Structures are given as C-alpha cells and as structure tokens.
Length: 72
Image 1 (cartoon, rainbow, N blue to C red):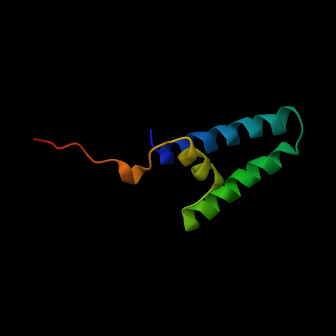
Image 2 (cartoon, rainbow, N blue to C red):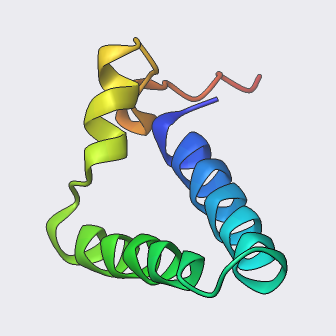
C-alpha cells in the first residue's frame, strides 16, 4: 500500500473511532474528529500532513514511486 492509501485508512479509522468515543464516552472526543478533518483539508492544499511524514519515516512508499506494469 502507498502513503495515500494508508493516510485515508488511518484518517477514516480515527474519524470512526472518535465518533464512537464522542457518542458513548464523552463529547470532547468530537474535537479530535474536527482536528482530523481540518488536517485533511489543509493537506489537500499543502500536500503535507504529520501522518505522511510519520509514514515516510516508517518506509511506506510514495505513490509517485510506483511504476505501472507494462501490458503486452
């Protein structure tokens, strides 16, 4: 998987988990959901977010590094 796919997976998981925590545990968890949303919006404009830097540090491939397979 590439950074883009991991980023969408992690963001979706954070949103789902914090929505459940906000509903069942304490409404303050919705602030974390808002943080994830704002981070996704800013990364759309800047093409950078902290999770991408962390994933690169762990050695996850960028989508630009992939070369499509030749079709014969």
